[in-house]
Amino acid sequence: MRSIQKNLNGFNEAGIRPVAISVDSPEESRDLCQKAGYTFTFLSDPDLDAIRRYDLVHAGQGIKGHDIARPAEFLIDSKGTVRWRMLTENYWVRARPEQILEAAKLLQ
Amino acid sequence: MKKINWPLWLGFVITIFAFLSYPFIFANWATTRDFPWVNIPLFIVALVLLFIGVRRAFAPGRRLASKIIAPIVATISVLVIVMFVLTAFVVSRWLPPSTNAPQVNQHAPEFTLKDTGNKPVSLTALLTEPLNNKPPRGTLLIFYRGYW
Image (cartoon, rainbow over the protein chains, first blue to last red):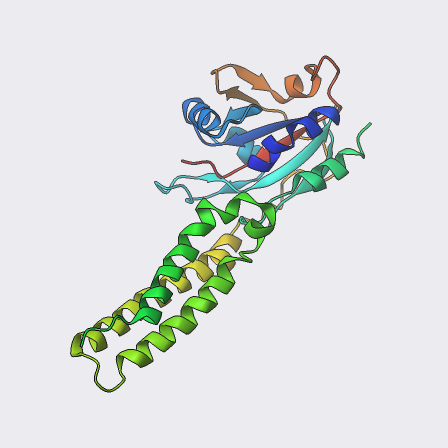
């Protein structure tokens, strides 16, 4: 997230809107954004509605044993088609902004 | 004679620092986050110091307390190191296969979720609402584990 925020201008120039999604409530996400200074969109999916539809449920991994999302990134074009994605094999490893901006060149 | 077993304690301090510095410092940069390039060498240095420290504790003339404390400190340190290595290289790979996640060139499933202002936002809206007064070229969805 930090690296997305740092590169927000780059994403803006490329016409790419970053959106973060997790099971955190809107209030928890708001606290996080305030503390960390994130200014892009954060969406809250406590019922795993979108997370399930994208098949990203990581069962029982929350602190209270609830289900959460596994890390994943999708770049979607204006027609709603997935143009690039990254499903990491190790959750310490995440997509880098350079990779995403390179992938964004594919979009019209 | 009370002589501090400095390699032992230095090894212990480096172990704790190497453990805590990952989430608080080195996870902030992609290079040191994706692989713990700083933490692993620190653990190696710590292990060498701990080894020297334990040998020292059992040298002739050391107090009994030293012989008791050194193995305890060394064991705790080794457990911390094992925990870090397991988390970094084993636990972090326990991820669901996500075989039905949308593939490249497939249509991204629609959803509507609340933003931090409790306002419902749909994927369609994200894909069409202007960005910098221009139609957006795309949306990057970043699913993350959350802070639960």
